[in-house]
Length: 602
Image (tube, rainbow, N blue to C red; front, side, top):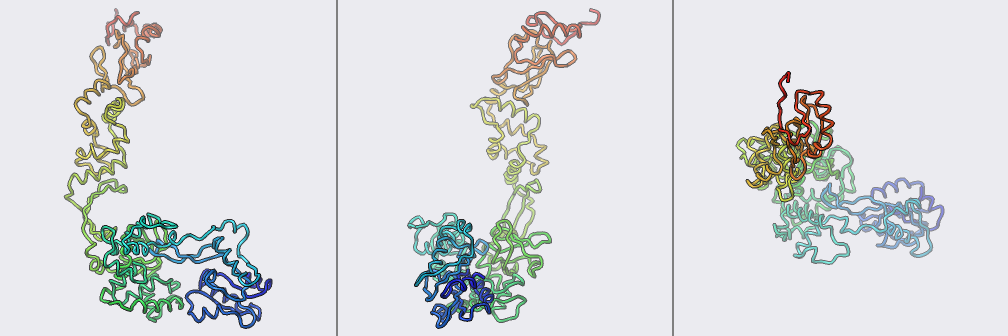
């Protein structure tokens, strides 16, 4: 509609900016039969043959021309007679796609710089008019400039080129430096493909990959694979040639071979795939494996996917990430797949292209990367230590068996993770010890829970014999492990400064309660007669709850001498009436401690 409005409003030919071929074809179809009689339509995009491109660029012989173009027409060429620009406000740009492991074209909003450049095409040879398919308000939200390619693109080829030069990124000066994390990821991929050695230097295989006009993943597949590898590389490099149907890559290969497939075919994409496959096949020996699943795994060794337990077709990939397949897809029942394209969801990506892989092919092709691993791990879900022997390929567990004779020290190390999850969970005696130890000064060993959990490896493993579950840990006596942290001198210092018991003047031992902010005990008032100095614990007064003969609190004090000299008189007056058989001397500081009562009748 905007194109038709522009042609009615302004003179001259029109240049219409659209993101890509698909949009150009749809707009071309929508305009067919609606343009003025003197207007002709001319598509213009990079995948067209050169003759068609020249025809689109040539000036109209008669009347006006409407050129439907991608951003190729922004700066690379001048189309004579254009006085109208219609900007759809979208552009295709290359962006690294974690879902495919390579750069893919995405459709994004134009930037202000691109919009200005496009509008300028209407004024190249004479005055013109630009029509934009967005509002003034949206104009302010546009980014100023498109991102630099090094910020948005895949860095694998860049990292490979650096290695060919024998250079590090830090050795070079960039207008926009590469992101260190993404560059490290790219180098990890190259190491996985054998293009870099353990020191990060280029290998001979890496040099051969650098000479191929392909992403290093696909170049590795073509170099190591059989006759089908070039065709598969061309399929994976191009947009999906099928719309609808299964995700199975085998169907794409069938379509390239001219077979009928149960899906809508994009013939333009199919034609480009065939041309690229012929070009890539030149010079390829084709003496490697030819099975489709093995070829895909050569390019994506980190995308080999193993079906999880359960009814839903959910997978875990050898690189450690999760993936899910539509339940209606014919591949949904397969145990092993290679996922070559995903939707990019960071938690559990949906598989958009994949191919089946047999267990025997995986074992034969990647025998050097499959091995048995013994492990003891704490299972948060089951609340216990699991001791297993696992046959693994990357993050995939191909076989899993119990490890019945796992060493006790390995089980103890795994149990430490359980302790970190569960916390210390001290029993009554251990809790009392911790409370006492935490009253000591800075020169004493640190018994705070945070420090104990941070240093578990230093003091706990040797005491964990037989402990391997949540129930075992709850029943575990932590006290011996805690006291073992103390030297003889530290233990003596603790007993002196913060003893576990208070010895009364009568020689009776009463457990000190350290659970509150201040240590405390409770005992009969008569039992501390004669005490003229208040007892101290770890530098602070012991809180004493004085009890009546009936064991009821009559006073709480941290200053016995002050109590004797002050409120004792009122307590004595009240208590003498209630408990006449018990001693209530006028001067308790001179009386002997006692728990006895007077005989009846005296």
